Image 1 (cartoon, helix red, strand yellow):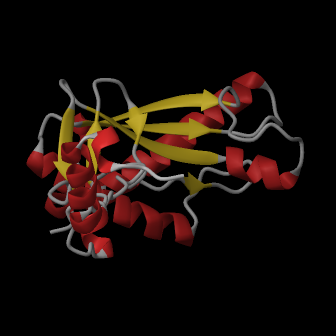
Image 2: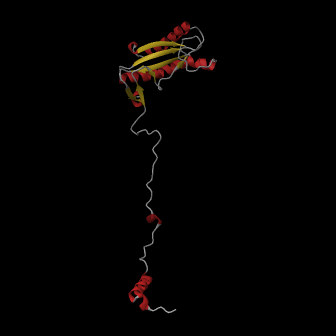
Image 3: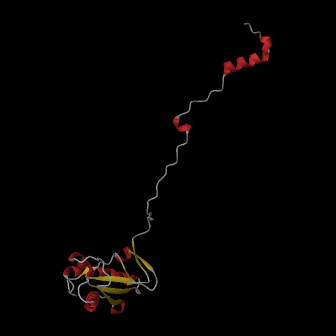
Length: 194
């Protein structure tokens, strides 16, 4: 079969020939970096972000509460005398309390006396009070003013361990030091440890 140029028109053939010879315009080769923009690096925020400028501190509220910096002391069964290790602990607590009161003189200290479940309620309340008084008196020997020190006995009412065995009872025979202020305060530990 013979096709004549005239049947399609000369212009159409010329256009087809020109396109065939020139083709589509060529793109410069693309490097992998240019192909897709690199995703921005994502840094995950820590679960509990702590600003670099924020130092550890001692927070004191308007209700008596313990502070992790003040250690608990423990007593022998049916005794209110401070053991040697308790005296060492209370010396460290006294240093912290004096520093806190130097920074915020209105801070009040309350020593809480506790007992295990053995004995009558009346006996344990009295024993808890003797334990609280022993801790308070030791603090006074380190210059903490009497006006800043309070005591209370909880007897066996606030156990930290509820099992009936010696390991548990020894945890409940304790003296705890708690603090409060007329308004909430935060004291940087760097101020306390000087």
